[in-house]
Image (cartoon, rainbow, N blue to C red):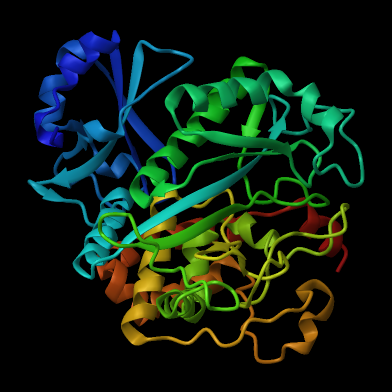
Length: 438
């Protein structure tokens, strides 16, 4: 059935949905919504739910006209823990035209660009998060103290009720989750589900963060995807697994069994585009001040940060920015938990398409331990050290400006520069302790 033929009011009656959350993610990654009773959803489906754009992080002013969020019926997710509520991802329009500087619209533009080239991107995400106390000052489990806590069964099972509740929801939603684990930091967890088309993955990523936070709250905890909430512990990554297929989604265009890493020529060019643009992409993949305390972190309590600091790729080797775990796909390890679900996918595709169009060469894979021998790779580009540095590189990036559009990049950089200025103006305890007597 075509999207335009789906009646949300009829779906509401069939599924006993009483309210809809008509949602969008703004440029700062904040999930915004209006709660719409089912009786009014037909009007919202036709005309959109109205918002004042200036009230969200979208680089608008109070003088701008109303912005409308048009719900996508294909994105509907019925909340497993509140089945009377349906969640809908929406596309933003203003004066009858799409808001180009909005994340979901930006991703759809990249997907349309790829479609014109006969390409279809599929992706999966690995979302790491911490379970902390309600006030966020401590881990939720005071007994989770091992130096190497990764995969620790006892700590995992002490949070079984929360982990199971989240996984049960994903099972109910048909996401096909296949594993849950305690991650490398104390109090940190990761849950994996099947990959799919990039837009659906982005919608599910946005909903997953909302779901995890909601269920954690029901159990008396707080879930955080903050990149580096604790200085001595491994940060929250959000690795993306990427492959590109034919328009029907039947043939993996990245797969070449004859290649040593199992990658086709187009896969290497796509990879080359991401590596060529990696420093500028950092501003989108690592979008907060705190992000740069993860990718440039010293060794953590467990012995490794599991985060990159240089632009390199390898085979099945987790010390590199990009690894190839198996034939036909690669894993981008740069992104962190603060990454915008839509801008993240859009930026991957924009960088990759630049690589295909310019036939960019990623160079040879490096089969070394970058944590121990990275100093030997003198020609590898280093990742930005701060959000400010990354934003300057993004603002100057011609390939990303062409790919993602000047309007989007200008709005994003302006909003993030405000964040950097606010951070720079903040007086920290560290500054007082180290310079009060200077």
